[in-house]
Image (cartoon, rainbow, N blue to C red):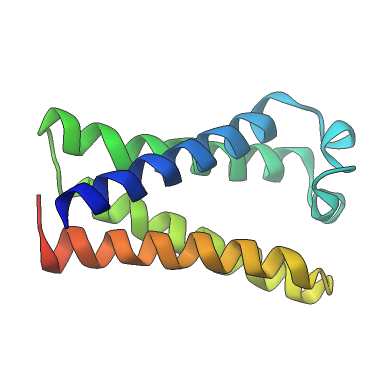
Length: 123
């Protein structure tokens, strides 16, 4: 179970650090072809979402690896799960149904980490 949790944590961290870095470094206009929803948000909001994703990715790995405040790892996973709920609501409102499936998978994986690191195998 520990190995499975670590694999999921690393995969989630990679996914969120890549998506978050794009949102932090690229102007909104350059993101629109791949991420159509950004047209609904200001540049500052898009950057905030990116920052939350990068911080969440770091929170999935660093506390657990260093042993410093390892209780932050499931909290980071919870924060990313909540972020995915917000993303799902945005895509639902925009009728972007294929994106909801991607968000749901990320939500389920983050929820699994929350469960695994709080209940099944706490750090």
